[in-house]
Image (cartoon, rainbow, N blue to C red):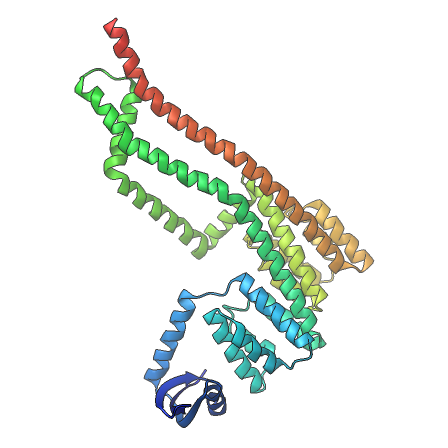
Length: 409
Protein backbone atom coordinates (compact mmCIF):
# COMPACT_ATOMS: atom_id res chain seq x y z
CA UNK A 1 0.00 0.00 0.00
CA UNK A 2 1.37 3.50 -0.86
CA UNK A 3 2.85 5.67 1.90
CA UNK A 4 2.33 9.47 1.95
CA UNK A 5 4.10 12.29 3.75
CA UNK A 6 1.89 15.03 5.08
CA UNK A 7 2.00 18.45 6.67
CA UNK A 8 -1.27 19.21 8.47
CA UNK A 9 -3.00 21.29 11.12
CA UNK A 10 -4.87 19.89 14.10
CA UNK A 11 -8.01 21.36 15.69
CA UNK A 12 -5.87 23.72 17.81
CA UNK A 13 -4.04 25.06 14.74
CA UNK A 14 -0.76 23.32 15.56
CA UNK A 15 1.42 22.20 12.65
CA UNK A 16 2.02 18.44 12.34
CA UNK A 17 4.23 16.28 10.13
CA UNK A 18 4.17 12.55 9.55
CA UNK A 19 3.60 9.65 7.21
CA UNK A 20 0.46 7.63 6.57
CA UNK A 21 -0.36 4.56 4.48
CA UNK A 22 -3.48 4.62 2.28
CA UNK A 23 -4.68 3.34 -1.06
CA UNK A 24 -4.70 6.77 -2.71
CA UNK A 25 -4.26 10.49 -2.04
CA UNK A 26 -8.02 10.86 -1.54
CA UNK A 27 -8.04 7.98 0.93
CA UNK A 28 -5.06 9.51 2.79
CA UNK A 29 -6.84 12.85 3.13
CA UNK A 30 -10.01 11.15 4.35
CA UNK A 31 -8.03 9.07 6.81
CA UNK A 32 -6.38 12.17 8.28
CA UNK A 33 -9.66 14.08 8.54
CA UNK A 34 -11.22 11.23 10.51
CA UNK A 35 -8.54 11.81 13.18
CA UNK A 36 -9.28 15.58 13.26
CA UNK A 37 -6.11 16.41 11.32
CA UNK A 38 -6.49 18.64 8.25
CA UNK A 39 -3.79 18.17 5.57
CA UNK A 40 -2.08 21.20 4.04
CA UNK A 41 0.49 19.35 1.92
CA UNK A 42 0.34 15.68 0.91
CA UNK A 43 2.81 13.83 -1.32
CA UNK A 44 3.95 10.26 -1.88
CA UNK A 45 6.75 9.33 0.48
CA UNK A 46 10.32 8.52 -0.54
CA UNK A 47 11.67 4.96 -0.56
CA UNK A 48 13.34 5.48 2.84
CA UNK A 49 10.04 6.58 4.41
CA UNK A 50 8.32 3.54 2.95
CA UNK A 51 10.91 1.25 4.50
CA UNK A 52 10.45 2.95 7.89
CA UNK A 53 6.68 2.45 7.68
CA UNK A 54 7.16 -1.17 6.65
CA UNK A 55 9.48 -1.75 9.61
CA UNK A 56 6.93 -0.28 12.01
CA UNK A 57 4.15 -2.36 10.46
CA UNK A 58 6.32 -5.47 10.64
CA UNK A 59 7.07 -4.82 14.30
CA UNK A 60 3.36 -4.59 15.06
CA UNK A 61 2.72 -7.88 13.27
CA UNK A 62 5.70 -9.53 14.96
CA UNK A 63 4.62 -8.82 18.51
CA UNK A 64 0.84 -8.77 17.97
CA UNK A 65 -1.44 -11.44 16.66
CA UNK A 66 -5.16 -11.88 16.20
CA UNK A 67 -6.53 -14.73 18.29
CA UNK A 68 -9.37 -16.98 17.21
CA UNK A 69 -11.65 -15.57 19.90
CA UNK A 70 -10.99 -11.96 18.82
CA UNK A 71 -11.63 -12.82 15.19
CA UNK A 72 -14.85 -14.64 16.09
CA UNK A 73 -16.08 -11.64 18.11
CA UNK A 74 -15.28 -9.25 15.26
CA UNK A 75 -17.07 -11.53 12.79
CA UNK A 76 -20.15 -11.72 15.02
CA UNK A 77 -20.27 -7.94 15.39
CA UNK A 78 -19.89 -7.39 11.64
CA UNK A 79 -22.68 -9.89 10.93
CA UNK A 80 -24.95 -8.10 13.41
CA UNK A 81 -24.28 -4.66 11.90
CA UNK A 82 -24.82 -5.83 8.31
CA UNK A 83 -27.88 -7.85 9.33
CA UNK A 84 -29.36 -4.70 10.88
CA UNK A 85 -29.23 -3.00 7.48
CA UNK A 86 -26.10 -0.90 7.97
CA UNK A 87 -23.95 -0.60 4.79
CA UNK A 88 -20.57 -2.34 4.73
CA UNK A 89 -18.29 0.71 4.99
CA UNK A 90 -20.11 2.26 8.00
CA UNK A 91 -20.16 -1.20 9.60
CA UNK A 92 -16.39 -1.46 9.24
CA UNK A 93 -15.99 2.09 10.59
CA UNK A 94 -18.05 1.18 13.65
CA UNK A 95 -15.89 -1.91 14.22
CA UNK A 96 -12.64 0.07 13.94
CA UNK A 97 -13.71 2.28 16.85
CA UNK A 98 -14.49 -0.77 19.04
CA UNK A 99 -11.59 -3.15 18.32
CA UNK A 100 -8.77 -3.07 20.87
CA UNK A 101 -6.25 -5.39 19.20
CA UNK A 102 -3.82 -3.04 17.34
CA UNK A 103 -3.17 -5.44 14.44
CA UNK A 104 -6.87 -6.20 13.89
CA UNK A 105 -7.76 -2.52 14.25
CA UNK A 106 -5.17 -1.49 11.63
CA UNK A 107 -6.22 -4.32 9.32
CA UNK A 108 -9.91 -3.39 9.47
CA UNK A 109 -9.08 0.27 8.83
CA UNK A 110 -7.14 -0.67 5.69
CA UNK A 111 -9.94 -3.02 4.56
CA UNK A 112 -12.44 -0.18 5.02
CA UNK A 113 -10.32 2.09 2.83
CA UNK A 114 -10.05 -0.53 0.09
CA UNK A 115 -13.79 -1.28 0.19
CA UNK A 116 -14.50 2.45 0.05
CA UNK A 117 -12.36 2.64 -3.11
CA UNK A 118 -14.49 -0.03 -4.81
CA UNK A 119 -12.87 -3.36 -3.88
CA UNK A 120 -15.00 -6.22 -2.63
CA UNK A 121 -14.74 -7.40 0.97
CA UNK A 122 -13.20 -10.67 -0.23
CA UNK A 123 -10.50 -8.90 -2.26
CA UNK A 124 -9.67 -6.59 0.64
CA UNK A 125 -9.46 -9.39 3.21
CA UNK A 126 -7.31 -11.55 0.91
CA UNK A 127 -4.53 -8.95 1.24
CA UNK A 128 -4.14 -9.96 4.91
CA UNK A 129 -3.57 -13.76 4.94
CA UNK A 130 -1.99 -13.65 8.42
CA UNK A 131 -5.30 -12.42 9.86
CA UNK A 132 -7.88 -14.08 7.59
CA UNK A 133 -7.12 -17.71 6.65
CA UNK A 134 -8.20 -19.21 3.28
CA UNK A 135 -11.21 -20.84 4.95
CA UNK A 136 -12.44 -17.42 6.08
CA UNK A 137 -11.83 -15.78 2.69
CA UNK A 138 -13.69 -18.49 0.77
CA UNK A 139 -16.67 -18.29 3.12
CA UNK A 140 -16.87 -14.51 2.66
CA UNK A 141 -16.56 -14.93 -1.14
CA UNK A 142 -19.46 -17.39 -1.14
CA UNK A 143 -21.53 -15.00 1.01
CA UNK A 144 -20.89 -12.06 -1.31
CA UNK A 145 -21.72 -14.15 -4.39
CA UNK A 146 -25.01 -15.38 -2.90
CA UNK A 147 -25.99 -12.07 -1.29
CA UNK A 148 -26.15 -13.63 2.18
CA UNK A 149 -22.98 -12.14 3.66
CA UNK A 150 -24.56 -11.60 7.10
CA UNK A 151 -25.70 -15.23 7.34
CA UNK A 152 -22.29 -16.49 6.23
CA UNK A 153 -20.54 -14.27 8.78
CA UNK A 154 -22.80 -15.67 11.51
CA UNK A 155 -21.87 -19.22 10.46
CA UNK A 156 -18.23 -18.21 10.47
CA UNK A 157 -18.57 -16.83 14.00
CA UNK A 158 -20.34 -20.01 15.15
CA UNK A 159 -17.60 -22.14 13.63
CA UNK A 160 -14.77 -20.12 15.17
CA UNK A 161 -16.42 -20.05 18.59
CA UNK A 162 -16.87 -23.82 18.43
CA UNK A 163 -13.21 -24.33 17.51
CA UNK A 164 -12.14 -22.01 20.32
CA UNK A 165 -14.36 -23.86 22.83
CA UNK A 166 -12.83 -27.17 21.78
CA UNK A 167 -9.28 -25.82 22.18
CA UNK A 168 -10.18 -24.40 25.59
CA UNK A 169 -11.52 -27.77 26.77
CA UNK A 170 -8.34 -29.52 25.68
CA UNK A 171 -6.09 -26.95 27.36
CA UNK A 172 -8.18 -27.00 30.55
CA UNK A 173 -8.06 -30.79 30.74
CA UNK A 174 -4.28 -30.85 30.28
CA UNK A 175 -3.54 -27.92 32.61
CA UNK A 176 -3.51 -29.93 35.86
CA UNK A 177 -1.33 -32.84 34.57
CA UNK A 178 1.16 -30.35 33.12
CA UNK A 179 1.20 -28.40 36.38
CA UNK A 180 1.90 -31.61 38.30
CA UNK A 181 4.67 -32.54 35.86
CA UNK A 182 6.53 -29.24 36.25
CA UNK A 183 6.11 -29.13 40.02
CA UNK A 184 7.19 -32.77 40.37
CA UNK A 185 10.20 -32.21 38.12
CA UNK A 186 11.21 -29.19 40.20
CA UNK A 187 10.92 -31.13 43.46
CA UNK A 188 12.98 -34.03 42.11
CA UNK A 189 15.63 -31.65 40.78
CA UNK A 190 15.86 -30.00 44.21
CA UNK A 191 16.19 -33.37 45.94
CA UNK A 192 18.89 -34.66 43.60
CA UNK A 193 20.98 -31.47 43.43
CA UNK A 194 20.69 -30.08 46.98
CA UNK A 195 19.39 -32.65 49.47
CA UNK A 196 21.12 -35.82 48.27
CA UNK A 197 24.69 -34.34 48.10
CA UNK A 198 24.50 -33.13 51.72
CA UNK A 199 23.51 -36.60 52.92
CA UNK A 200 25.89 -38.61 50.75
CA UNK A 201 28.85 -36.49 51.88
CA UNK A 202 28.52 -38.24 55.27
CA UNK A 203 29.03 -41.63 53.61
CA UNK A 204 32.12 -40.39 51.76
CA UNK A 205 33.73 -39.14 54.95
CA UNK A 206 33.29 -42.56 56.56
CA UNK A 207 35.23 -44.26 53.71
CA UNK A 208 32.78 -47.13 53.70
CA UNK A 209 32.07 -49.38 50.73
CA UNK A 210 28.70 -48.25 49.41
CA UNK A 211 26.02 -50.28 47.62
CA UNK A 212 25.80 -49.98 43.85
CA UNK A 213 22.54 -48.03 43.80
CA UNK A 214 23.97 -45.50 46.27
CA UNK A 215 27.07 -45.01 44.12
CA UNK A 216 24.83 -44.56 41.10
CA UNK A 217 22.76 -41.94 42.96
CA UNK A 218 25.91 -40.07 44.02
CA UNK A 219 27.20 -40.00 40.42
CA UNK A 220 23.85 -38.78 39.07
CA UNK A 221 23.56 -36.20 41.84
CA UNK A 222 27.06 -34.87 41.21
CA UNK A 223 26.46 -34.64 37.49
CA UNK A 224 23.14 -32.86 37.97
CA UNK A 225 24.62 -30.40 40.45
CA UNK A 226 27.67 -29.41 38.41
CA UNK A 227 26.58 -29.98 34.82
CA UNK A 228 22.83 -29.28 34.89
CA UNK A 229 23.37 -26.61 32.27
CA UNK A 230 24.69 -29.27 29.87
CA UNK A 231 21.43 -31.20 30.21
CA UNK A 232 19.51 -27.97 29.68
CA UNK A 233 21.46 -27.22 26.48
CA UNK A 234 20.95 -30.78 25.22
CA UNK A 235 17.21 -30.50 25.95
CA UNK A 236 16.93 -27.13 24.18
CA UNK A 237 18.97 -28.38 21.22
CA UNK A 238 16.76 -31.45 20.99
CA UNK A 239 13.58 -29.34 21.03
CA UNK A 240 14.95 -26.97 18.37
CA UNK A 241 16.12 -29.89 16.22
CA UNK A 242 12.78 -31.70 16.43
CA UNK A 243 10.83 -28.51 15.69
CA UNK A 244 13.05 -27.81 12.68
CA UNK A 245 12.61 -31.36 11.36
CA UNK A 246 8.83 -31.16 11.79
CA UNK A 247 8.36 -27.71 10.27
CA UNK A 248 11.07 -27.56 7.59
CA UNK A 249 11.43 -31.11 6.26
CA UNK A 250 8.77 -33.12 4.45
CA UNK A 251 10.01 -36.41 5.88
CA UNK A 252 10.01 -35.04 9.43
CA UNK A 253 6.46 -33.72 9.10
CA UNK A 254 5.13 -37.03 7.77
CA UNK A 255 6.96 -39.00 10.46
CA UNK A 256 5.57 -36.75 13.20
CA UNK A 257 2.03 -36.91 11.84
CA UNK A 258 2.20 -40.70 11.53
CA UNK A 259 3.46 -40.88 15.12
CA UNK A 260 0.52 -38.72 16.27
CA UNK A 261 -1.94 -41.13 14.67
CA UNK A 262 -0.27 -44.30 16.02
CA UNK A 263 0.77 -43.17 19.51
CA UNK A 264 -0.82 -45.07 22.43
CA UNK A 265 -3.77 -43.22 24.00
CA UNK A 266 -3.14 -40.07 21.96
CA UNK A 267 -3.34 -41.65 18.49
CA UNK A 268 -7.06 -42.33 18.61
CA UNK A 269 -7.65 -38.89 20.16
CA UNK A 270 -5.75 -37.10 17.37
CA UNK A 271 -7.63 -39.07 14.73
CA UNK A 272 -11.01 -38.09 16.19
CA UNK A 273 -9.97 -34.43 16.47
CA UNK A 274 -8.98 -34.44 12.78
CA UNK A 275 -12.25 -36.12 11.70
CA UNK A 276 -14.34 -33.68 13.76
CA UNK A 277 -12.46 -30.66 12.41
CA UNK A 278 -12.71 -31.90 8.80
CA UNK A 279 -16.44 -32.64 9.07
CA UNK A 280 -17.27 -29.33 10.75
CA UNK A 281 -15.23 -27.32 8.23
CA UNK A 282 -16.56 -29.15 5.16
CA UNK A 283 -20.16 -28.90 6.39
CA UNK A 284 -19.83 -25.17 7.07
CA UNK A 285 -18.32 -24.54 3.63
CA UNK A 286 -20.96 -26.58 1.79
CA UNK A 287 -23.72 -24.87 3.78
CA UNK A 288 -22.36 -21.53 2.55
CA UNK A 289 -22.55 -22.69 -1.10
CA UNK A 290 -18.81 -23.26 -1.56
CA UNK A 291 -18.25 -25.89 -4.32
CA UNK A 292 -17.30 -29.35 -3.07
CA UNK A 293 -13.84 -29.47 -4.66
CA UNK A 294 -12.93 -26.03 -3.29
CA UNK A 295 -14.33 -27.03 0.11
CA UNK A 296 -12.21 -30.22 0.15
CA UNK A 297 -9.09 -28.23 -0.71
CA UNK A 298 -9.74 -25.84 2.18
CA UNK A 299 -10.77 -28.56 4.64
CA UNK A 300 -7.64 -30.63 4.03
CA UNK A 301 -5.51 -27.73 5.25
CA UNK A 302 -7.53 -27.52 8.47
CA UNK A 303 -6.99 -31.09 9.76
CA UNK A 304 -3.36 -30.31 10.75
CA UNK A 305 -2.09 -33.77 9.77
CA UNK A 306 -0.25 -34.44 6.51
CA UNK A 307 -1.24 -38.12 6.41
CA UNK A 308 -4.96 -37.31 6.48
CA UNK A 309 -4.42 -34.23 4.30
CA UNK A 310 -2.80 -36.39 1.60
CA UNK A 311 -5.77 -38.76 1.69
CA UNK A 312 -8.21 -35.86 1.31
CA UNK A 313 -6.23 -34.62 -1.69
CA UNK A 314 -6.54 -38.05 -3.31
CA UNK A 315 -10.25 -38.06 -2.42
CA UNK A 316 -10.67 -34.70 -4.17
CA UNK A 317 -9.08 -36.12 -7.32
CA UNK A 318 -11.46 -39.10 -7.25
CA UNK A 319 -14.45 -36.79 -6.73
CA UNK A 320 -13.28 -34.65 -9.65
CA UNK A 321 -13.26 -37.79 -11.80
CA UNK A 322 -16.88 -38.52 -10.88
CA UNK A 323 -16.71 -40.75 -7.81
CA UNK A 324 -18.72 -40.20 -4.64
CA UNK A 325 -17.15 -38.66 -1.54
CA UNK A 326 -17.66 -41.57 0.87
CA UNK A 327 -16.06 -44.35 -1.19
CA UNK A 328 -12.50 -42.92 -1.42
CA UNK A 329 -12.66 -41.69 2.21
CA UNK A 330 -12.67 -45.31 3.39
CA UNK A 331 -9.68 -46.30 1.26
CA UNK A 332 -6.68 -45.65 3.54
CA UNK A 333 -8.39 -46.30 6.86
CA UNK A 334 -7.72 -42.88 8.37
CA UNK A 335 -11.45 -42.11 8.57
CA UNK A 336 -13.49 -44.35 10.91
CA UNK A 337 -16.06 -46.59 9.18
CA UNK A 338 -18.94 -45.00 11.11
CA UNK A 339 -18.02 -41.53 9.86
CA UNK A 340 -17.74 -42.79 6.28
CA UNK A 341 -21.11 -44.56 6.53
CA UNK A 342 -22.81 -41.41 7.87
CA UNK A 343 -21.34 -39.33 5.03
CA UNK A 344 -22.56 -41.96 2.55
CA UNK A 345 -26.09 -41.69 3.98
CA UNK A 346 -25.88 -37.90 3.64
CA UNK A 347 -24.89 -38.22 -0.02
CA UNK A 348 -27.77 -40.56 -0.79
CA UNK A 349 -30.36 -38.47 1.06
CA UNK A 350 -29.12 -35.10 -0.21
CA UNK A 351 -28.45 -33.85 3.34
CA UNK A 352 -24.65 -33.85 3.19
CA UNK A 353 -24.20 -30.73 5.32
CA UNK A 354 -26.54 -31.96 8.07
CA UNK A 355 -24.83 -35.34 8.21
CA UNK A 356 -21.37 -33.77 8.33
CA UNK A 357 -22.45 -31.65 11.30
CA UNK A 358 -23.74 -34.81 13.03
CA UNK A 359 -20.41 -36.52 12.42
CA UNK A 360 -18.61 -33.48 13.88
CA UNK A 361 -20.92 -33.38 16.93
CA UNK A 362 -20.46 -37.10 17.58
CA UNK A 363 -16.68 -37.04 17.37
CA UNK A 364 -16.35 -33.82 19.35
CA UNK A 365 -18.22 -35.55 22.18
CA UNK A 366 -15.92 -38.57 21.85
CA UNK A 367 -12.91 -36.23 21.94
CA UNK A 368 -14.12 -34.77 25.25
CA UNK A 369 -14.62 -38.27 26.67
CA UNK A 370 -11.16 -39.37 25.46
CA UNK A 371 -9.52 -36.28 26.96
CA UNK A 372 -11.08 -37.05 30.34
CA UNK A 373 -9.85 -40.66 30.04
CA UNK A 374 -6.31 -39.65 29.07
CA UNK A 375 -6.01 -37.06 31.82
CA UNK A 376 -7.43 -39.49 34.39
CA UNK A 377 -4.68 -41.96 33.41
CA UNK A 378 -1.90 -39.36 33.25
CA UNK A 379 -2.36 -38.14 36.82
CA UNK A 380 -1.85 -41.52 38.59
CA UNK A 381 0.91 -42.41 36.10
CA UNK A 382 2.87 -39.28 37.02
CA UNK A 383 2.29 -39.92 40.73
CA UNK A 384 3.61 -43.47 40.33
CA UNK A 385 6.70 -42.28 38.43
CA UNK A 386 7.45 -39.61 41.01
CA UNK A 387 6.86 -42.10 43.82
CA UNK A 388 9.23 -44.60 42.19
CA UNK A 389 11.99 -41.99 41.82
CA UNK A 390 11.58 -40.74 45.38
CA UNK A 391 11.49 -44.34 46.62
CA UNK A 392 14.74 -45.07 44.76
CA UNK A 393 16.38 -42.04 46.40
CA UNK A 394 15.16 -43.07 49.87
CA UNK A 395 16.34 -46.68 49.46
CA UNK A 396 19.73 -45.54 48.11
CA UNK A 397 20.22 -43.37 51.21
CA UNK A 398 18.86 -45.80 53.80
CA UNK A 399 20.66 -48.93 52.54
CA UNK A 400 24.17 -47.79 53.65
CA UNK A 401 22.71 -46.80 57.02
CA UNK A 402 21.27 -50.30 57.51
CA UNK A 403 24.61 -51.86 56.57
CA UNK A 404 26.38 -49.62 59.11
CA UNK A 405 24.00 -50.79 61.84
CA UNK A 406 24.69 -54.43 60.99
CA UNK A 407 28.45 -53.84 61.20
CA UNK A 408 28.10 -52.18 64.60
CA UNK A 409 26.15 -55.18 65.92
